[in-house]
Image (cartoon, rainbow, N blue to C red; front, side, top):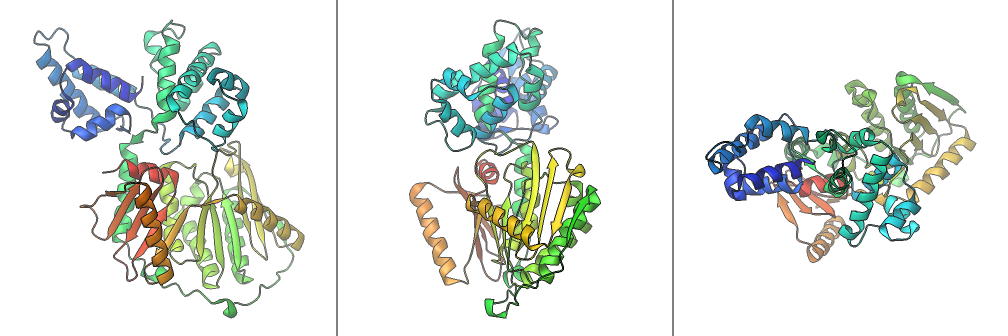
Length: 475
């Protein structure tokens, strides 16, 4: 069973109100409610689990005077910890999870469509992220039941648990038990729509906002971008085509590309990567060299279009955002993302500008064995620029920056803010926690972040699905 289901069963057993249980466990009533409905999940070894177990055991002793049926603190603690999955799937929406579990179990669209009573093309669109069921529960029940049946019939419980976490099926000792399919189907259904937020994930978001609240971005807001008539025409470099291998090769390939683009005064660059963050990308020395390369490009007047991978775990998303937000504020970097579910077997990096290109290929999980190809040959550069143009045409804007010092931008922000207020109610996050930052969550749509401690106040509209989902669950 899921953490929410396990906790809810214990809460019902002690026969006290939600408010009484919350007080006994040292929580607010709203925090306990979020635990019980699956919107929040504590870390397995956190104090929250200990407090829940102690509080529930104490209330159980009160409600069962004889003590024979009272809950034991150690038993409650063990059950709660066992029900918590370690998976970090924050913000991964229904479509992504649905596609992952169908792929894992080899369930074809036609079979799922037959179970759900819909057309196979509808299942395909859901898996691609193009559609969501209008009525979730009627659609979800038969789908979860089919997933559970296939899992048990094909003896893939271990693989499924590796994806969604403990299911509770093995507690009875027999996966073929008559109740196993219905129990597993319930757990699968909760996982498909649960999008559980871990306490650690909320903590990461709070630290990210604290960083925004205290950081001075003045040098980036006053970034000296050159005007178009000041730009020199791109210089045609010597024709080069070479491969790079291994981790050191990856480092050198990316730095060589940035330096070549800056040296030849490239004006427009497009790049994308769906690789997980590698050790080399977290290395401070490499990041420093990488940032200097980007800054050289921006100082020369280049505009960078970056296509982010939004399927990264939330901790990776935040690391990437901390690197790029100062660069977004220059107005010369525009972030995009691709909607829908994408390839998970191969990963790629693609950079392209007028004078050079860089491309890589690797199998997911074996990026250190991948290969980078750097080229300045005109035919190669033309190919990669055309390729990235096709990709860019399919993207959606990930984030917009509006400066109060720019009248047109300030007015555009006012219009956007007014349109969201008409459509939905915004909720201010951390109103008493941040001095120079205003965060407003429009759940399911966007997060508006205002940097108020800058010489030029800046408003950032974030459409990153994982960040928006996490912020919607913050207080």
